[in-house]
Length: 205
Image 1: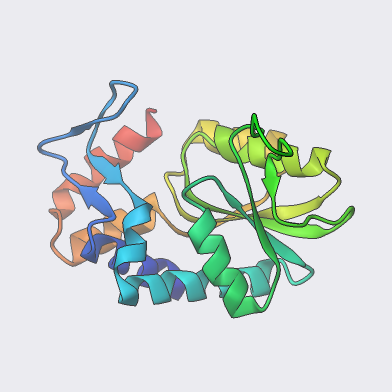
Image 2: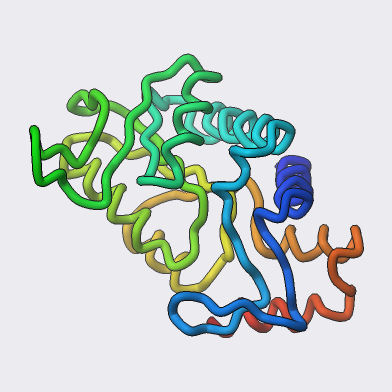
């Protein structure tokens, strides 16, 4: 497990899907000044990183959710990752829209979902957990048994952890903020002296 966390963190840093800039913070949509920028969609453009991540998702599903019968991606970032991992696993796949379509059949869940089917949600990033929990609840309302979530990266925010626990939604992330900043320091993406400040940023959100 720790080996996967490190390998995935190394790939995310290498392709700048996750980029650390403590001295020149990014501005999030909320206005928060953040030393970290995360865009896991870029993984799809890099075959080596993509192979590491998709195989890690498949391995995590096998290990953590052996009863899984189908993968469900979050819209839009989780769709491609769910599709590729489902192909590796030889498993059905679908995805959940942010809201129901206003045309056609008005679907919010795309793909075939059988009543009682045991599914795992594939998400690219967990921060406060809100959007992912909405997906879990939509699937539950449709009759699925949601075994849990596999996400590529998590910040480990207290708000997100609390929300997931309250929703009884297990999440297993391929890698996390703590692993990433330690790998970043070891590989000279940042100075080791910057680790404490990065942890303080995360812990105070």
